[in-house]
Amino acid sequence: MSEKVGIILVNYKDYVNKFLAECRDSLKQQSYPDFNVYIVDNASSEESRRYIRNHYPEAIIVPRPDGNYSAANNAGIKKAGEDGCRYMVIANMDTRFDPDWLGELVRGFQGKPDAGFVQSKMLLYPQNKEEWQQPRINSLGNIMNFLGFGFTSAYREKDREIKNVPEIRGYASGTSFITSREVIEDIGYYDEEYWMYHDDIEMSWRAKLAGYKIYLAPRSVVYHKYEFGRSIRMLYYMERNRYLAVFHYYRCPTLFLILPAMAVMELGMILYSIPGKWFLTKIKADLYFLNPGNWVKIFRKREQVKKLRRKGDREVVFDFKGRVLFQEIDNPVLKYIANPVFDLYWQVVKRLIFW
Image 1: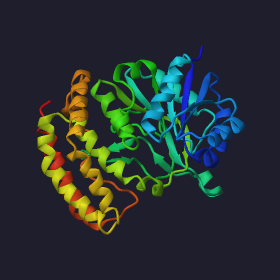
Image 2 (image 1 turned 120 degrees about the vertical axis):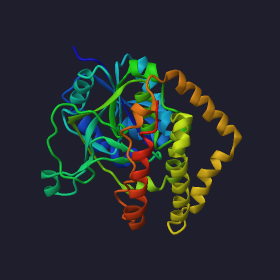
Image 3 (image 1 turned 180 degrees about the vertical axis):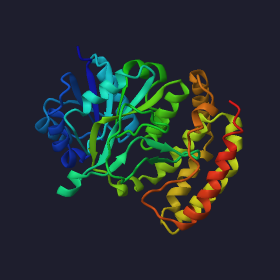
Image 4 (image 1 turned 60 degrees about the vertical axis):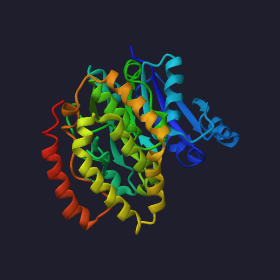
């Protein structure tokens, strides 16, 4: 007997007009029978709700007034739980799913009793016939950098067969992963302070500290219409939230050890933001941490994490990486100077973390 699954898709303004049709069609072809689709209509309008009703009447619409992606996922998870769903799948709408995508996700999760999240194999959406015959990888599980950055693994490499359900040492990509009602009840919902970006890092880090592992279901295949340009428009959240994750989850002794590297990276990011024309955005992200009220929230979160923590920093962060891997940016200073230094620094520092 199959367990009921809630698939949560978040719409933002006109995303449904661009992406819903192909996503919907691939969901209708799923071999796994027992699931509901929840479209959380973020920044909801009558026009967007009407479009969803007309083009995907089977979907359950969950309206929300603003663009908070983390809060939208929470709304979808809660609604799925109310409807009796045992498993929750967080998925992007700019995707096309293989027919066995959902079934393989469920089987992957059920086969790993210690799983907190299980991610699909993510392939870049092919642009022509040749690419459909040999697609490229978007992510086989994401890589976590010790300074709070996150990167995809095996990016743009040729697709290949992966056996079994291997562990992901970094974090699960929010483009397509499964979790359960029991895991959410244990570790909690999305932290809505993150708003968008790094939410998957934050959730994965929290799950690992609580003793769960993260896995890849390689036969659960999703084609992702990934656009790097869409990500860099949200630099404020990306920069602010990587600091939030660091301040929320590292213990104080670990923070002290990485502080010199954080200071060097901060200077580098400020300098890099000037020619990149996002200096004011960078300063705005930094100003968040000059607000005493925000530090009150950070300390409250640290207390919550302390109660949840079942593993120490040493065990969780030992697989974090020292290099900063901006795959779409070829910066020689980063590549030949900063990265070797950061990597050496981290190799030394992580061995000094005693718990």
